[in-house]
Length: 425
Ligand code: MEV
Image (tube, rainbow, N blue to C red):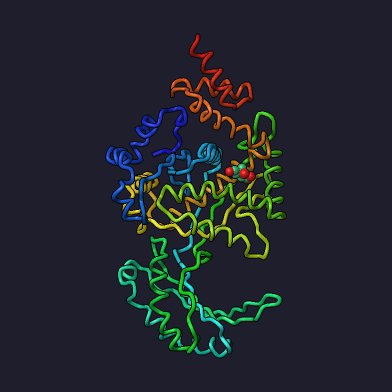
């Protein structure tokens, strides 16, 4: 079933949903009627007084690893969904995106504080790894039955060293757990808390923290796309020039953390929107992504764009701690509906799709920035909100928006005047 739905953006929301029947089934469509109930919300967090809604949109046109994908995105910012859908449309001509993810290996940390003889402690812990490995067995029997469980134990020696402060040695045990289709925070935290007393007994040292690391660099996703110049040409610019400007924009982000932060913000516009739509912890994903960007000592862009033999090559590598089970995923009906719409087989595939969406989002932003600038498209989308704020009904929004864009005046006052003029005809 194709994800290419020409004119999708022109339909009213209910019609759009109907057009997705092939991907969702009638039952799937109906499930979008049930939002999160107050009762379910009250079980999720403390002191609940209400629930809070955001737009849930479908990004179309995606071809990822040869599979058609409609991608649910929850986001409040205009242009994000339009940009990824447009870039996914462009990419189709050269086969769409390739994407893959590492197995879901999460890291947990057990910290030994104020260690006096770090070498001796590292030695004692390293010798006792078989005992710790045995102790980790059976902590998560259901996970082990699904093919997950302990992957590796790693001993690290760290030192806190700042000018004018007392030095402190620490020894940290990394516990790597395959969490299969979960995000895995609870499972890893349970395991490190379980192992901590034995770590203390083995070393005679004091355990400090026992917690997962959100720098999930054993759990990276990668996506690639290749574009021909014709796919990038605009009315004003030839494709090759657009491509060269995109690569120049990327080199700017590589050289400058000020630019890289904004570049990556655009990437995360796409990834976070998929994370929220699928009930995932976007703060964890954000933290991991940004920490990963600093791995060579300077904050760098998450993506790479290069002009190679007459084609634009784009790629992304990013740690993505996505789950398809656990957390709010089970209890949130819209999350369930979104997962059905996306049709990912599990966490690895979901993360790979999110990486492709991040890459598409970055391409959309860089293409706009390299050509007409970002404000033009942004303001076109923003104009719709302005028109609605001025009181335009759904049937009037289109005409008011057109006029605001034509006059390049996006004030509510102007929208009110246009609306008054329209109604007086
Ligand atoms: C806006 O949300 C994201 C951009 O600033 C990203 C970028 O500059 O690459 C457009």
